[in-house]
Image (cartoon, rainbow, N blue to C red; front, top):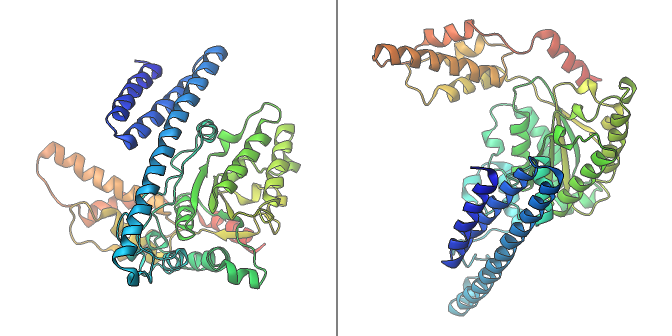
Length: 419
């Protein structure tokens, strides 16, 4: 079956769900069908492609209409419930109550402060649905850019192993102005802006960026720079403009560019007229961040910070530079425990593993643990004798591996940090 056939089948299911008043299911199915039509448009000739895009837009519109209808119904029911609640007990309204869940709903500033501290984050009820609702035009653009699953991540700083100094730096420089906005205004501190996270690969720059979005209660928009690049004249500039407008509309938001050096090369070292146009376009949008009324945080991640055009490293752009180093000895110990905890094993000397894996990245340690588990699993499938993973199994895997970064490379990162 083709993508169009699949879309037609899903549309029939959506129509059935809508007829039986399963509105949420229908919305989901219509949206899924529209996305399939958009995907199919990329495989067709120009005439058929335009027709498929038109079909997709019409299906997106049906989903939007149902979404609006459902939202209106829920708001009417909520007002009715709130009225009943106020009638029954007026004196219990010191803290707002969510009429649908009957759970006390903390003010947003309390939610944010608890999230920042990380001490009691489990006590704060997260919104039932933090996924972003897009217009059909927005969804088409996001599909073209390969951007999906835009939401407020559930990963917090509590989930980030080690990197305590990095987390403290982010809290002071980035999160506090976002959370303490009124106080920041008193001291003329701007919220939002740009951060450059750099360091050797495999140490969780994307993971940390998601945690920052969680702590800031912001939507996380993950951009693959290669999807923005389009060699047709002016296309990159338009994509960048649309992206920043979209993020500003749905702020607070975190725009995350992985491997940002791909679209911010040093202009003095490139002969590409295309890239020489692309860099100023992104610089222009970066310069407009502080002037925007809405909070927008741009995070760029790179393994090669020295390849980035110097203009991006000025204050007001990627003025905040945060080095993400390999895990230290304590963090490596925790990582070994984390990656082996779900497999049956003997008592293991995690501290020793940590001591002999200097310069191993988090990804390196995961690889070591995975290879040890795979080795034992393969053996057991042959012998049919189940056994624990032993210390020798892990040590053998460590001996067969090497860190993905050496001391010379680490020195280069330190020099960049101190420059």
